[in-house]
Picture (tube, rainbow, N blue to C red):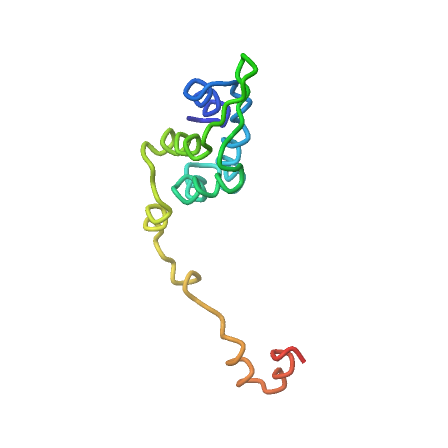
Length: 132
């Protein structure tokens, strides 16, 4: 799948209703393309945690108006799972993505000193750290 619209068409075929009823959810999944223009954008939402996050954002169900005028409730999670499976081939976890990151010790594991250590080095900062 290349575009949120194509996912929406697929959802409409599977669950009923017009593609426009699904476009917001599929656009949400693919909004991370703004940050990274290739497949790596998927690491941010295309996993099981992203599916549950979509449910928090869009609600437990999507209200889909059918041609007959009937409103059908479609579980958000099912539509979100469909998106991930169409792009990834299966449901993956955030751990699957994170496990593929190669650590760069030059910046990924270089924490700053804690405020107590800073105070020990510079006693004049004591009041700033305590909020005084």
